[in-house]
Image (cartoon, rainbow, N blue to C red; front, side, top):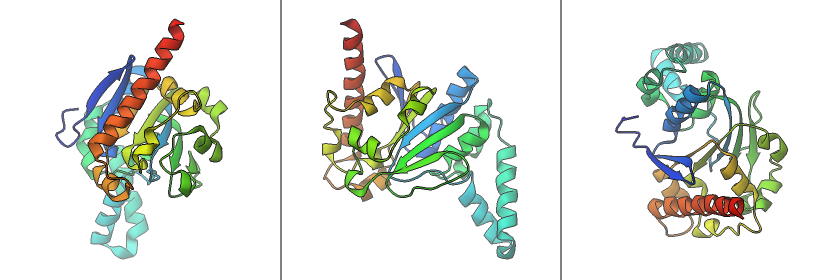
Length: 246
């Protein structure tokens, strides 16, 4: 993962790996690494302002199709998408990295489904409650966007019993957090997010700076947002260790 555009950083907190990337599509390489190790697909819970579930390579294929023949758009888009996917080998991450530049930052989840890295996903977001043939979307009420409190998870009716039985990846986009107050989570009163953190086999975090800067309501930086989230994850993991030692 040495691509200069990826710039991943791995933090280990309480024995759990937390990977931070600048552009969201690069988490695909991290999920692929986990698949190489486990040899089985995972279940994703993603918390994001946007529903990042566009089809694989859709924008690249659309632009290419329109440049060739707008009258054959649908046919050509599907053809070019199939061509890109056929070049990918799930266990060969070099094959994924070679084409990731043609992938948008909202196309990685369904690409991961196509590659077999994921068998299901739960997409928590503030924009759309899509209904697709695969995966589930949950629309956060406008007045709760940015929240990690139990009330938010209950309001969207996240199927916690189903998720608790799954091998989990937790994915978080920093553009979900609109204000610093979002990180003031009372862990004695709010356990759902903490349980997701504890259960996750790996946690991926996308910085998405341009979207974060556009959406935020408070005067805080992407660096301080990242620091607040990492500190919260650390508190959760430390609390877990303390509880186990009691």
